[in-house]
Amino acid sequence: MLLPLHAQVSPGQAALARTGFAAGDLLRAFARTPAGVLPRSRRLNAVHTRALAPGLEATGLRGGLLSFDGQLVDDARLVVALARTAAWHGARVVTRCSAQELRGDGATLRDELTGQTLEVPARAVVNACGVWAGKLASQVRLRPSRGTHLVVPASALDHPHAALTVPVPGSVNRFVLALPQMGGRVYIGLTDEPVDGIPDVPRAPESDITFLLETVNRALHRPLTRDDVIGTFAGLRPLLDTGERGRTADVSRRHAVLVSDDGVVTAVGGKLTTYRAMAEDAVDAAVRTAGLPAGPCRTTRLPLVGAASRRTLDEVSGPDSLVARYGTEAPRVLALAEGRPDLLGPVAAGVTGAELLFAVRHEGALDADDILDRRTRIGLVPADREEALPFVESLCAGV
Image (cartoon, rainbow, N blue to C red; front, side):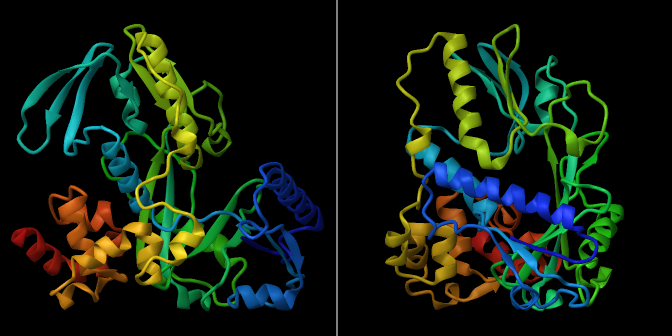
């Protein structure tokens, strides 16, 4: 994570950021995180700063502040791995099913493929429906905000080797990030805008796109234009409405676990980085509310499907990109291409045909939308989606 020190970053702001990075270093020390995993933060001169981010404007560049954090390679892969890990431990995972009504002793569900409704009795019910949680628990009041990202080719930023961190004008705690990704792409984000209504699929408005481009361009030698944007995506944060006024950016990201009068447990708020702590609190509340027998929570020590130590992953056979997405399951993905060399090559965005077939056979994908938008991130770039669609449709028809 690289914070370039241009004129718009005052010495005071740089000192404040450096203090924050130092606090992060202390937290890593207390957690006994090895320096080989997350090195300490440091100050760089202008030459080293531009070596990491060649697209930076050189004029007035005093150097940069470098810090290190973990990076999620593919959020779709994380969600699928979570679901498959839960299934391995006895969960029943059902897609294309919506909750129409929740009660402490069960739920009314709807099969979105057939329209059939069904009643499901339960000893405990957890409402973890994100921004839709308030529709199923009237006591829950949310204040959703929209976060938008842009997708641009890495070449448009001269192939950065670090994530750029550009301060938002007029703010001391907001930044726009340019995050390098596999496959020669960079994600630029993100916004924090209040929304009215909850669409099924949030879209990135032009105002968000303009804001992100204008902010990141403050640090670049060659400003990005609208034509550089090859894709966009947006999501909604389920922030808890505490009744306080002000920007959604200032609303706490801490999660909350609430229990309604009829015993439904609702988990809202939170961040992806704390999903295990949030899940533990929600299940503890469900066990306590329903008086269920349960052993000690294991979530802090439970690895996901495909997870392993770095040493073990280094020994897994297969392309690095495949191991990064599938871990120890990479050989299982490759095995699907035995006798089918056409599945070994990339279909679009660096994703191979074997991965797409794996989504159908092992990850519950039902159609092209599932494969392109929910099991992979091909769908983030419309041109990539169009390129892959014929192959994916033939795959779905033949399986």
